[in-house]
Image 1 (tube, rainbow, N blue to C red):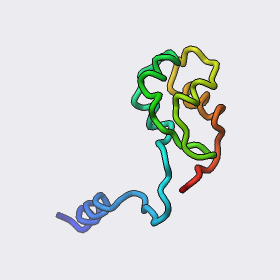
Image 2 (image 1 turned 120 degrees about the vertical axis):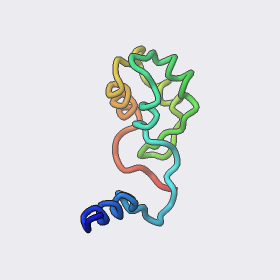
Image 3 (image 1 turned 45 degrees about the vertical axis):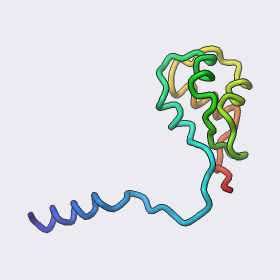
Image 4 (image 1 turned 60 degrees about the horizontal axis):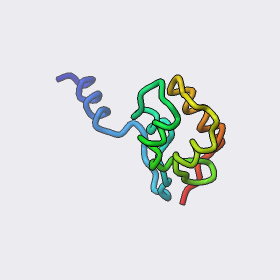
Length: 98
């Protein structure tokens, strides 16, 4: 094994991003919830499948079911449309920590 191969092997073992020692952030990122779903999807189906999920918002954690109840979109054609609509309801910005 060459020096370059050993250096690459060591880099692969280290995390890509250092995690800090701060307060926990409650809830899941909306992108993680969206990645578990298939598209297109009806709002009612999303509420049944993932409504109990708690998502991260700038104002603190919220149940996805409550967020979707505020939405008027009956059918989400794509993941990006879903994420955009959720962000319109809850807002964008830094996520509150505990």
